[in-house]
Length: 107
Image 1: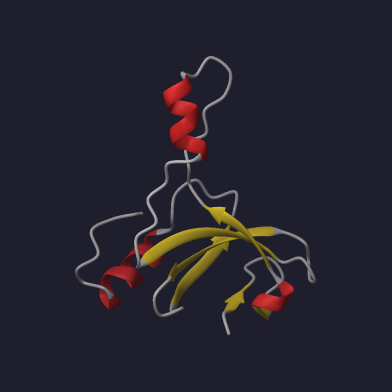
Image 2: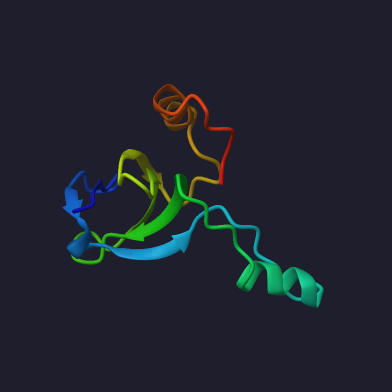
């Protein structure tokens, strides 16, 4: 079972207490965007096996959103941080690179 640390309330929560909100750090396209840009945002996402940054909500806890860096193949969690953070913190990137030397970058 997947267990994530909520950076807001400090609770180690298993996935039954959480709601997945999909891929994090996406560039969203609003009014004035082309059809191709909107289509790419909505439907054309890469989904490789490995390290992902995902949005999660602590639904049955504090109710706040956070981001988890984890491996989709092994469920290994590299860290969590508040959803208001626009880029992954350096310590999480360093943790990923230490454990996955072949990792080349976000998503």
